[in-house]
Length: 298
Length: 239
Picture 1 (cartoon, rainbow over the protein chains, first blue to last red):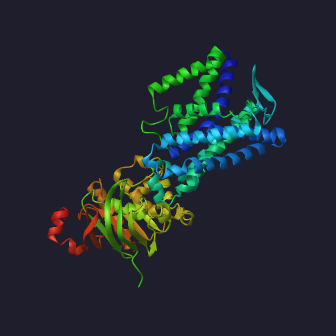
Picture 2 (tube, each protein chain N blue to C red):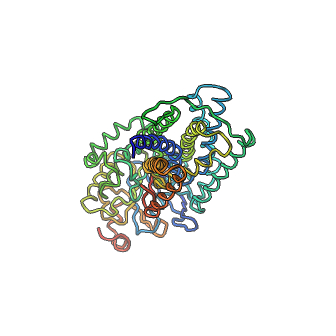
Picture 3 (spheres, chains in turn blue, red):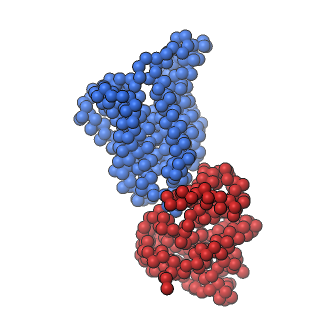
């Protein structure tokens, strides 16, 4: 393999892995804390893309503003989604198939958001200006667009910030406590009624920021969240449901397999190879890379 | 004269369609250590869970320092100064010992003083200090119990509920646990302690309440009940 190929694979792995990680890590945070698969996470990517379109293209404002606006808007939207589609079911948790019912209720929210976007903006694919244009050649034949570089750096920074938040702050520790032992966390005085919307808001905000960048790579359109949602589901299951480190490893592992397959055997075969590997790994380890047979807890 | 620290009246509670405690009454004065004794499966743990709000009572009242807290969620009752060391310790398995202690000071007022509180717990439990940066799940059963008791000291409390602190421990570890509970009692704390029998509670118990089939069938000072051969032999194992 030529040096160019190796550098190309490495660069592409970091870029793909970072954005996969940012889209998926919120899903893991939610699953680890609330025990639900939040199907509205893709919609948060879509909303983030439209906010980027609105701020960068329609208003012509600063990209940093787009990131901050997407973070705040999807934080609020995610918290509202929790209050509308999950919180009412919390009390009856033990009497229903909570995981399956919330799978459907959050999916319903996603459908509503998609159709609201369709009504507001029509079925068109809107071009989103890259947050930053241009690029550098880092090796013979390997170009690195600044958009991708920024996307990778922001994704890594946000995942690291999430890690610090969970490890060091009062509310971050409370989220981990609830994930590990709900009753004990309540005995400590953790107000779960506030903590659950906070958690889903935070997770959604990460997906919303991912949407700002993905909008620049692809387009903003009502179904822009569908593929990211599917990818996020695959990453979190591959990494082990509820495991944050597992999600990060899985994101980069999937990025690596996809990049390597693209360079070595070409784009046509990269996805079949990727899903073949995922199938194989999950048959050998059905609970994912770092998942435990009894589901990891943050 | 001030009223009791804890007053439970006509309390019924259970799970789904099973009633575990029915019409139970219990009064605990400030500074008193009340011990609930009785065979397993007769409602002692359910009573503690109903008092602290982890389960919602189906009937009756719970007054904490005169304030009606019946049916309030656990996090609110906790914030009023109720500390509950649950059966099985309730430690956060993937968090370190120090993080577990800090969670004991979660309410905003005590969170500010958490460093000083952690230092006090370390001083009182050198074993816990040695394990500070280990994850809770790597500790022995006795160490876990001490962390759970240490965590109960992380904020000021009006009443401390402790559920079977001797459960599953070796005799040496039980001694260490009861030494800590003895210190808690000496500090003037109000304590409700659950145990299966009389064996360990002699040094701390003021009042004893015998719980059977979801209700209290006998109450009295420790000295009195532990001297009653009928009660000791029928319900409580050996002394």
